[in-house]
Amino acid sequence: MSTIQLKTPIPGPKSKALAVRRESALPRGLSHAAPVYIAKAEGAVIEDVDGNRFIDFTGGIGCVNVGHRAPEVVEELQKQLDRFLHVSVQVTPYESYIELAERLNALTPGKFSKKTFLLNTGAEAVENAIKIARAHTGRQGIIAFEDAFHGRTMMAMALTSKTHPYKAGFGALPGDVYRIPYAYCYRCSYSLKYPSCDLFCARHLEDTFKRVVASEDVAAVIAEPVLGEGGFVAPPQDFYKVLIDICRKHGVLFIADEVQSGFGRTGALFACERYGIEPDLLVSAKSLGGGLPLGAVTGRAEIMDAPGPGGLGGTFTGNPLACVAALAVLDMFEKKDLSRRASELGAKFQDRAKKWQKVWPLIGDVRGLGAMQALELVRSRETREPAAEETKQVMDYCYKHGLISLTAGSYSNVVRLLVPLVITDEQMNEGLNVLEAALHSVAEKNSAVPQSV
Ligand SMILES: Cc1ncc(COP(=O)(O)O)c(C=O)c1O
Image 1 (tube, protein in one colour):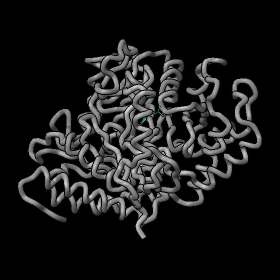
Image 2: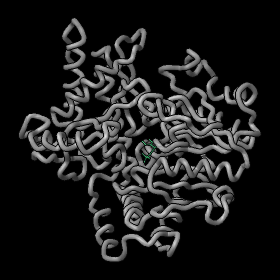
Image 3: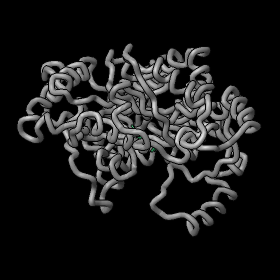
């Protein structure tokens, strides 16, 4: 029996009524991918207020790698509801916070002594990683990448690359942020080809220290090991080793933002493991909380200890519900081998997507690591002109036919896969069938020659 069940045209009448209320109650700046209002969610399936059932390829933007309402997470939350909700770790601390820090210290890459500080969101964790890096090095400069996304608060926004809608009109942005090209091989900023480029983009950091900002003024380089909002770009295997060697030579810290690439998404608990690298500071959030808001900065103990007492904090940081949820998430990763499942799901996606790419020129690039997979859509294989409008048409077709999916990319022309890792094979195939039908429909509409897989 199919998982997708559509009882009304999408959006249904109750969703439409909520959309009217939304329009008058919420600011237009808060946009959404699909106009369906949700009543419940379980695993990789969500049901809207009209009783329509959808397969979810977005996991709340990569926040439920363990699935919606994972039973293990819900059970721990229920127990915590009977204990206490909020006391603030800055007033009277509690054990779950300490236990979570201990486990993250042990699980994040690097055999050195580590400490962890918990926050509420990814952006807040990024902000704090920058504070800690500056306090430790006594330097101000931060180097970020083209196509990076680090969040929507002031410093995180300054580190973010895409102008519209994230930065335009919101300045003045915090200073001392410098930007260099990422290893986005499909759109190489230097028009070079890997591997003959010899990782020019990574080596160029040396040049940046001569021509843009002196290394002794730079506290850290911050990178997403695999680009998230920027289009799910996984750099070549040796990119980070070259980059980090240069950082170390100059006493510059390396911060890995694993907010989107973390918690099993790429086939390892952290994408850094896939690259064999050990960041000085690792920022995590999203799927760490199993659906609850939680962020973390984990790093070398001596760096984490740089800010003095009271220098780090926040009323709700590491709230008790989120801490017990995260402990359940980590247990699930140990028991269910979800990272291996991520690799299986990624292989399934690649298998289908490579076939689609042979048939439809619309699909310029198929790429990813583990289950962090994407399609980049283009108007022409030769010019690689981004097909943003067509990408939106694909997304619209998907939700109207029972699949919730998301775009990404600086040119809004990437279809990304953030499926909960607990999805069944049947549900995954059903979701991919809808995506295939969407691509077929959009590719045919935009091409003179009808084609099929
Ligand atoms: C890599 C990365 N860093 C930071 C953030 C910001 O996280 P949050 O939205 O929880 O503030 C995101 C959000 O998508 C992200 O993908």
